[in-house]
Amino acid sequence: MFSKKYVAELIGTFVLVFMGCGSAMLLGVGAEGGHLAVAFAFGLSIVAMAYVIGGVSGCHINPAVSLSMLLDKRLQVKDFIGYIIAQTIGAIIAAALLMAMTQSFGMADLTGGLGANGVAGAGGIGGALIVEIVLTFIFILTILGVTAQDKMASVAGLVIGLTLVFVHIVGIPLTGTSVNPARSLGPAIFAGSAALTDVWVFIVGPMVGALLAVIVYRGLIKSK
Image 1 (cartoon, rainbow, N blue to C red):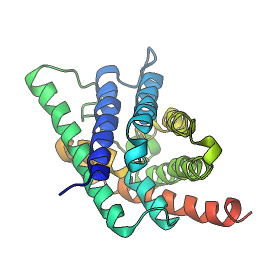
Image 2: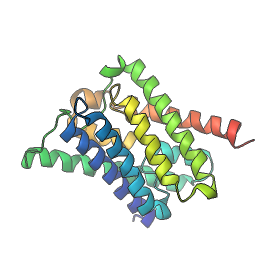
Image 3: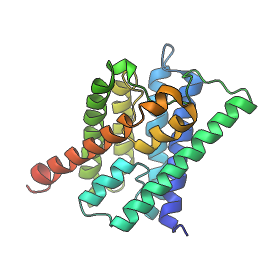
Image 4: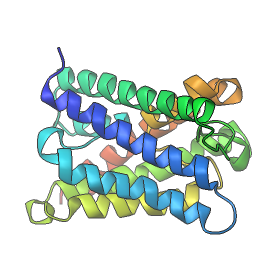
């Protein structure tokens, strides 16, 4: 039986994927501000959920964030597993609903794959891995720093959300920006084809980025 924390993570991840990938599908990432609008859709989803479920689960809604909290000893192994399961389920439900809306209600999909991530814009698998590792490193390092300071508690959600916006601004033309394995896995399952074949990049890259962020945070910032 899911605890309230796991239900919160499921709902939060659902909102992130539904709003973020949904905006990408409807707006695209080309001209007329689509790129920036999608970046803000992802970032504002984090802001909204941080202030709704932050007090329940911490609002990780991202396996890479949960891994960083586990490694920094802020999360127990049991909850780490429960969070990842809940996050994955939330992402899959969101992607399934988006697919149903395209098939049953004629919703546009300008991405052609439910907003799934891809490696082509980064020049292939190697480039995509580097992009995802670097962007996730920046994102997770920010999260670790801002959530460790009690004085920042009231604005932490805003800082984290805006950080997600700026990593999307850089990453969208390259990989579509994952920095979140659950966000990538949900759409890839239904998009199939290359999205599903390459989804491992968007699982491994963010997890490695999270690991590096914890190493730097604990060795350079937390130890000062």
